[in-house]
Length: 246
Image 1 (cartoon, helix red, strand yellow):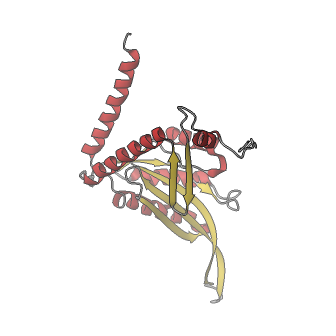
Image 2 (tube, rainbow, N blue to C red; image 1 turned 135 degrees about the horizontal axis):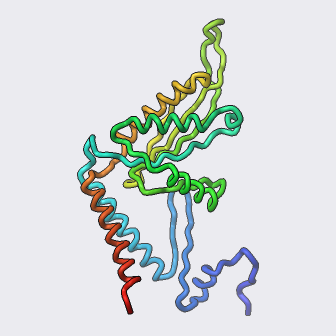
């Protein structure tokens, strides 16, 4: 008796492996309902997942128990190029906006911007692999900043007529994400007259820099040096094992 019809796209190899018990086959399924994701898989896959979760929990405990950075400790920031609303794209100079952001960030004595070529390359790779899904890229840094340029209609009083009217406002937003704690995600927003975009951009930059310096939990330089040392030693061990004569 035949229990399964092989319909393309309906039955995955992972599903068949789980039902038929193929020897040595690894499989995994993920189901997300609301904010909860349930993972199921074979014994080996679940053991590996449990180990990863344990390591991540230990990493978070170490970060939370580490001494926080001093006010003078540098913060390495990956600043990504902005997204821009379609209706603004033909007329708004996104490059000029970005240049101002870079200039304002660079003025601060604590902020250290990642080389823009590295950040742009990570963004291009993410766009190439994930397309319009806009998966957030990551490079080695303490904090990532993802800016957005938008426009919105806001109500106000016409100074000439004294009547209530509406105007197009420039809306600048950024998501500021810590690379240490997954809960450390902050939003910065500045809204202003679209014809005073230089002033609005500068105010937005100041808010973003202040948020980076005060909101995310960033461990002190001693912890970060230890992470870099562990990473370098791990790479060295791999190279030595690979180059070791047999």
